[in-house]
Length: 148
Image 1: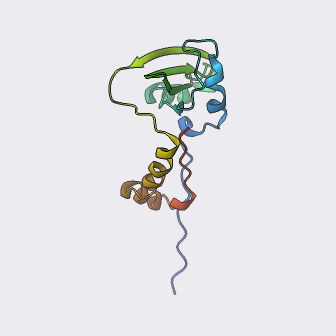
Image 2 (image 1 turned 60 degrees about the horizontal axis):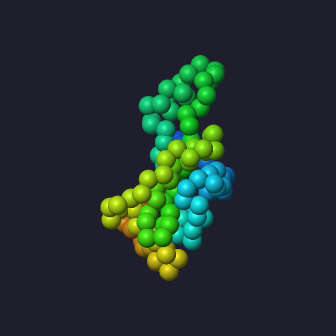
């Protein structure tokens, strides 16, 4: 009889995805008086951008003693204000508004609550995601997708 196979331990996640929910909580309040004044519109959709660049992060991680400041952490907020979609970038370290631009393209659609639930359920049935989860010995039913 063969000994049972135990999966190899998973490597720790990279530092860019070890964030807690605190960036999400602090993002909209970081610039409450910044235009537009209705940042907390019901269609606000916060997400963390894949920043800083990988080369900057690797350079910081390899610096001796890490005396340098860590790379900035930023949040991207997509919000509907009136009939416009704003792309707002907030620096979570300094709690300052980095940019607020109006999007004129058809990209970055903001989903309503009624659209978000089926979209999340559809993502959990997406073949490449299911395969990636299995490849990491993770259970797809334990995945939590969040859109705000």
